[in-house]
Image (cartoon, rainbow, N blue to C red; front, side, top):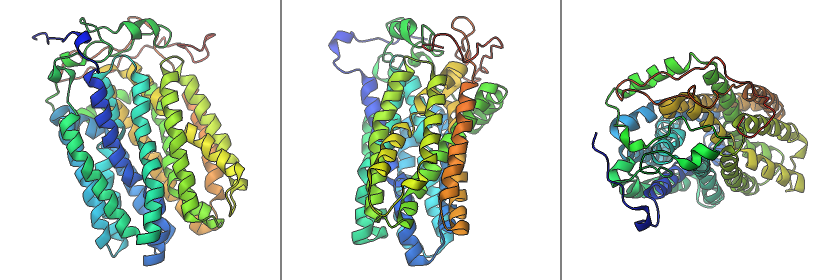
Length: 476
């Protein structure tokens, strides 16, 4: 293969990888505009159509499930047809699904538009897009960049949730839906202009690579000297030409033979259940049950997004330096404690205790993503984007189950208390699963990239993997 000419780094002020990361951030921001809305819409839809919270939660559940199931196929589609094309179509689907809700008159239409169309659209971006962009464009700073991109959904929530709540209250939910549609459409030109496919398209190597394709910074410092499993320039890996569905399913079959995959998927199932499914969808109606004004509850949920931005970026920084298993265990344990303490904190007025919960929970919201992605990259090498798509699918299945279960529990018991305590118990399980993951030792046993673009190699499984309790936490 012809060696790609690499411009002198001194002649370039900003590496193209950062422009790609910025365009990706905006794309995720556009998708987050709709994802921040469901909890604001529950009360207006119930008031206008008389639908129960359980009925509306069914649409939320379908949305979250498809959002997750689409992810691994989206990663394969990006390999087959290109990132820009897939992301642009996904944004158009989000815009269409949101805009058409203004015409709905029956609950099945809510499930179709809000659940199916928008679920497929947002699922075609999300974590699969993050894994693809980080895997192709970055060798150094992978944890930090994945944390920043993950925080895009939190930033979208920060920007849109109070705004949408105000629009719903002043102009109605239909105007809010149209606003979201316009926001998603506005991101499409940015994606088409700035979201390049691979470093080779602009004649460069991934950020952090020297001319031979090796990342000196990563090899000497990341995770205690443990080399990244996908070291080497991304632009020497040609795009895959196999069917997207076959690639996604085949990768799942190979990954499912390893215990690491099931531990990561199980932990992420709990992560989705206790964040996107439980708190994001039901915090506002639960606060409303206690007499808190909807705009106040929306502001609190937006504050979760503020501190999530800080927490996720900080988690990415920590992931580049410490054992990601220890980080995951701590995140889940602390999240469980905060959920267990939430029930007595609710009240009609904003108080310091509820604010403390919002800050604490926000810092922990999706701080789990950078260490989970790092462990996936380490275990599965070049197939990590598709594998992580399946891990993220479990996240959204957990969210779907929790969203539906919490709505049914509220209808049956008249309170959300059982849902919060159940979430706390799940978090304790998540901590145990995370600390049970074994890591491959540095050196020849590390996962390698596939030998053929047409047939990705199965992940390397080293049966001698060390346990999670090393004497030194740094690097495992």
